[in-house]
Length: 409
Length: 166
Image 1: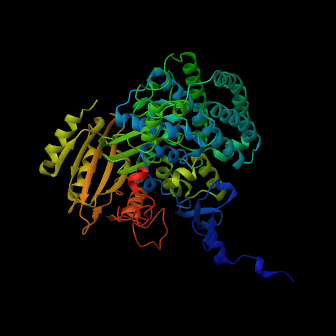
Image 2: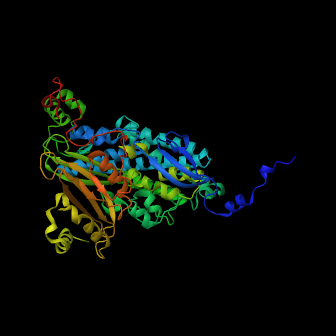
Image 3: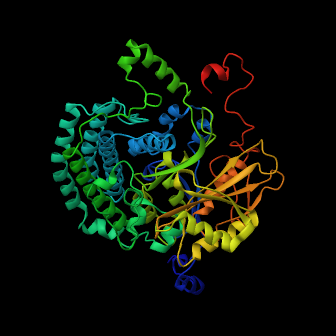
């Protein structure tokens, strides 16, 4: 006896012809923890079959309250909080905070320190983009590129280790300069990195850029127009992929970025492929900047002549009374902070990373607010995945480079 | 290039008495306006044929418990990408009447920034499509970034501020 149930009725067929809403909507929880979201993000999707109709986002799983903690910490001790925001490129966060303090205290940083900072920040940008693009490969099913790039990220971390002793939460800057000078070993590692990195990067690009499967998965997926991107407050590679050449390094140069010759890669359609390509192009530009900075590394001191702000070297602290006193005064926050407010922005891995600080002259900031680029552009996610499939949503999220630490602060 | 003078004069010409407290900390034009004028001002800057300040960089709140009548400040950072001009606008609110119109009609990016400000300070953005907590749990019945909630137990006597640099 034939199963009559399998033959669709006329009303079912009529429903099927309608483009919208075949059956009931399915509610699907993507996250909070899901292997493909690389972090703790919850998205409650309303699915019509395979198509996403609407999304409800939930964030705030990290609960760290950095802004509140900053109200009780002397300026110098806030450094360790900034590391933990965008942990894929912690030196940028870190040095960005120091530059905010320098702007606030009118400390002039010597050229050598500025160049070392540029090198470190560009290394951080490379490692940030490597992770983002590598994981985008993993999400489309290609694990190889990720493994290739991870070796290079490891080398970058070894350079950090050589410069400051830490790998992930690099507390390498100081108000007024760097913690220490670039050692000859660090310079050797940097030169080796510059030499060994391009072939690997080229190979990675060969694996992906014209790969049919990859292109099918990312082209015309999650596109956003320049106008919408600006309205959503996009910055960084996500905005540039949409065709707006806004880069804080060029618009408001800090730390001698005006000395270097580099271009701003710009995409067209703002889709996932453009975001991928812009990040790849930026890696090459960063490499160019590092080369130039190493080539023209100025001689001279690596810290400003500002003993009331620059933390004395540890050796001196153990042997000289003067240094011990300054060390104590700085760490305990007895520096005379002026009254006022300051906003300073740096180009983080994801875009404009801003520090807005109000001081009432006390030991701690009266109010400190971090402008985290992730927090601002992640709210566009529902609009970008509307009408896409679930597998597209995964790719879009990973190409936006949403980092949980930066999202929640 | 726009100068602070130019923008300030245009804003005074348009809003007159409603813009005041002009400052230039570290070169950024800072001004204060009233709750009634904040949205017209943002729209004016957004649509102005010369300024084109159509990028909302940041929106946040500040709590000043010791100034009666203006306990809360909402701070907007607006950026004109074409002229590379940044502007900071403040609005002060009284604690008993903590309402301000939402900027979401103008900037989609204001949505979460306003939710965050509401979450931490309790500032109510009128007309916001979804004014709920964003980083904290829904059940919370206080606003943690207000200054009456200290970070540490203030009754402890072994940790005095004078000794520990706070």
